[in-house]
Length: 314
Length: 264
Image (cartoon, rainbow over all chains, first blue to last red; front, top):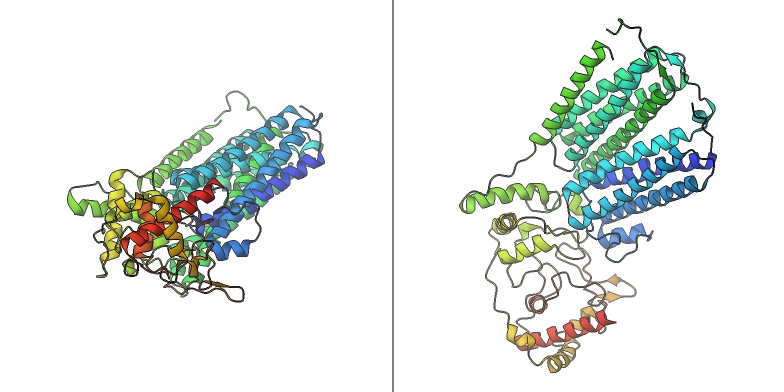
């Protein structure tokens, strides 16, 4: 097995990029879609001549409305993740002891972030709903790539390079990868629903399917990976995230279509509850995908499956 | 891979196919164009619901939460007027132009990607929203004297400059003598913006140099803004105060100034 070094700064940069991507860029992007203010200002990257690097949010809100201010902060967060991706790529490419795989991954991350920015521009300038969905889905790809970088560059990954041979590892490898794919498809269904191009029933069906697969992955980790504490910890984290995500999904449904629709008498309160639940549901959904990616990588690179004896392949 | 995993995998694939199918098959399908006004309206209504309702509201009253987060507010169709028409009352061609091109420097993006028949359908539905409360709604476009707009340009622009700053038109009292949108009637150092629109929100006169023009840059657009005003704002119609040739003088002056500043 190739020995991986540990580069503190690359790891810190990757972690910072992941957090900025999920909590700021995707969080604010989710808020933009939840509040339906993606087209609050159909110019890009400026807002009617106001620079992208203007931080007077109050003035922007009073001049162009709160919606423009939210969209503006999303674009700024996108710029920040762009700068972090450039920095990460430059550090990786210039470091001598960095494995080639990291270098390639850093370039992939930069290209994904670049394409994301361009998709956002095309979406706004062309007022194109399909591009909005592509922009939302592209964000998930960025998260998967960033999570891969975080995992590869982590101290634990560098220090513990043992790959134990565990019965059931092949099964976990299979279902963790299936889980990532199903979760990704579910996020496409969710993005389509949020942009009024998909039906709720589709997202519900995909969410139930993804939850089933994730629960199965968690079970496999907890029951067959007793000697692999990192996978067990990861599975517990995934279980917690899944629980929160299902709760938020239920809350979002209740606010948008269900009993809570009439609970909030004031329209503004109802709107805030709907926006808050939907955005939190999106952010935690992305976190579930990221955690699932981490488990998939751990299973794929840190486990060696036991080949079953011939004739026992039931 | 054992048999249980194979079966599980097949079930997951089938589930994904069903999920994707449900996602994209149950979406709102636009009704076919059909024949006559009924078909046009049905398609317009469906398009409106997907493309316009989240800002303008299902009933066109722009009372949505999203609308409250935008400045200027999206049009409230129940008022029966639009701001940027080439006449005192909008024509369907005005509605179609705004839907296609949008309104610069507002949240109203253009829908240039829509096909011609869909633009017609949306314009027809917007017209219905404008007129359904027995408001004046859509009307005939008055004649804009195009021949006057292009004749004797330098002298006309000079006369327009004088008129702009005269008490008769009172343009500079709101837009300022330098056209930057801060005149004595619209702005004060102590109180900021002084004018309000029909909704009670601060109404800032255009900075004619920096802001550009929301209603269009063509001479006919400028003529219509001055002659017929901007409904719902303090920009009053001047066609009763000024003659057609005087309005043309103002248009010539504004065009000269705009071109001059663009060149700078």
